[in-house]
Length: 418
Image (cartoon, rainbow, N blue to C red; front, side):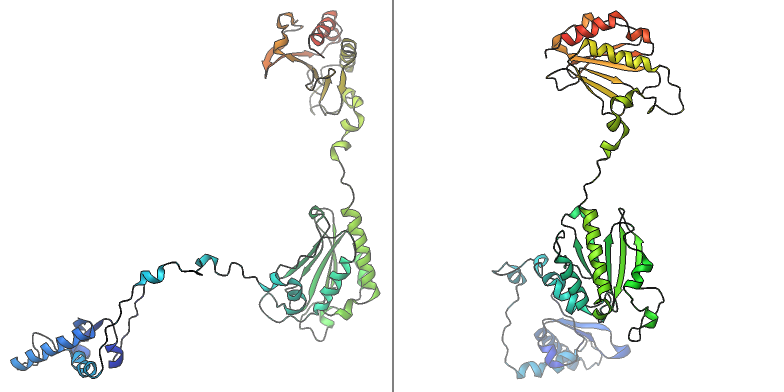
């Protein structure tokens, strides 16, 4: 905790100690034992007693070993005034004082240089990832960022990362247009995003003629690859990577024309309305026609009912509820709504291989359960969430063309207030 242990022979240090452990009594093989321990005053008092006893016995190895430290310390203590030391109370320092901070809060409000002034850090004060000096021209990044921000359609520049600068579209879900990596000591790496196939690498290498690293005398980086690269990025974007060392390399019409085209391409793609995939499905586009087609069934299994069965059931329901509304936009189910009703009165499963499935629904309180006609052995009547459900299956034209079914549909729909 608050103790300091010293191996010391200096008497001025020993006399100021709180506690002394005297090892001896002799040096080397004649020592190594604890002769006495205590305050400096206790050591001196012991030394006096041991010396007196030794002088009376006349033996060099008395039963009370001599403390040579205490005997040497005696005149030192006697020569200086003695002042009682105030006992240290550590609990006093542990008390909470005005202005004190919890250790976890120390430095909590301190900011790194890229957080306090990110633009200054990335364009002037930055250092490499390993702490080495950065040699590429910071004015390159400043000019490119300012040029992009002159255009609409971009959010604020994100400067507060140690080795990256980001410019996104005006909406976060549009992603980043520029990702600049600033941690390399020799090159600023800028990655731009554009529509797929906006640029061709061969054309862009000619448009922005950057020397290859092997040909740069002042840059100790080796490589023969072009400093302009194009790759297919995530989410159907084209990514254009350009590594720059000096402003003079890109302060040419070819680069600024490229940047204009990249900005226009990014905004065109980012601001395009997303395709509603649901509206592009065949059942959404074809509607009624889709449900009468022989498509959408489980593959590898035969369909055991003819299209005329569904066509006839459709006509029968239309006749029974002429004011019913058919919803055709689902892949496998057609729902029929009665006027002013939020819950479908009937639903038809049109893509079952074995049969067409018809389900009728009405509130339990309406009653009428005794009038349910079972048209075939597989019909099911059950109650669910306060509604009586009647489920029927049809695979033959005769089943849906019966007068009993027509009458029952009229009676069932008529029993529901609408």
